[in-house]
Length: 249
Image (tube, rainbow, N blue to C red; front, side, top):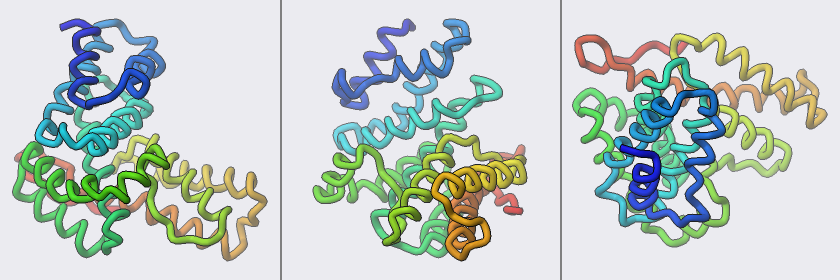
């Protein structure tokens, strides 16, 4: 297995143009200090991961979104390269569930988490990915939705806010969260980092930390983090190969 052949196979599976496919740039940027065999391990993991979605390869918007998930995961600093594929799978599930929430405008707590809980208790990763893909497939066949994706370049969570500053702050927090390694064992650290990021944004946009607006944004940002933690909690696998929720603190 060599770099060029793996990159070529990944690009073909994702149905991406040369202009859109910049995976090599991401690998070089985030793993520049790694030896060649480690880089090859990462792109091998990416290829193995994409192969889990081959039944959807003819739906180009789906594969474009999958590629976005891959590049976002590459931005997360890893303790070990051997954690990458597991992190990629978790991020993909979270990524597509958030897209489904955005598209369907459904209750996060009731329908999405109920679906995930039921699926994760009964399914291995491959059937889970297949079921999740079938669940969200209709939105990638909706031409209006696909047009919006093309305009935005990337799916954003729909915040339903009218204030431009609030939209910008929540969008930045959403992007910030995508670049964090969401770890249940580091909940306190994540909450502290989130608070620091909010303080930075409040200063940037001249919002008082004691204002109603800042309190509202802080609550919503914590909810965004808790949503990711909740889904990750449902995906934590114990030593007996069963899935059980871990409490969110």
